[in-house]
Image (cartoon, rainbow, N blue to C red; front, side, top):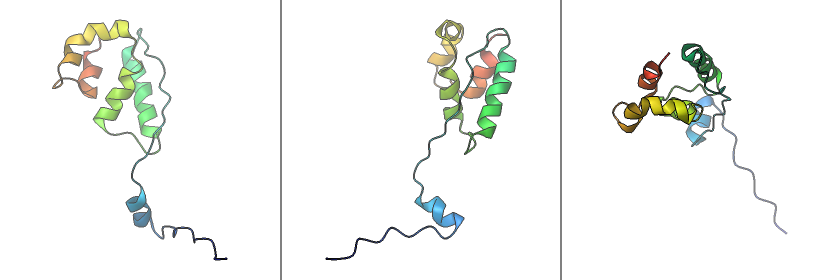
Length: 99
């Protein structure tokens, strides 16, 4: 009977580990959109992005997270921005949502 196969070697440094990682899932728990004060809601959202491990910095990821939390009745007010791919960015949505 042969010995069982050896497990793969463990990374020996941070750079070895980073080379082996192909994807990562970041979980954030954003609060529901708060219509009375969108600015305060975005402050809370950005705190979540900053404390996520790894930190969320990609515009597209931020955009997808916030769009999943803004109720459809509020998205209607920015429909023209959402329909234009050149304007559909996190920062533009943040500035466009009416206070």
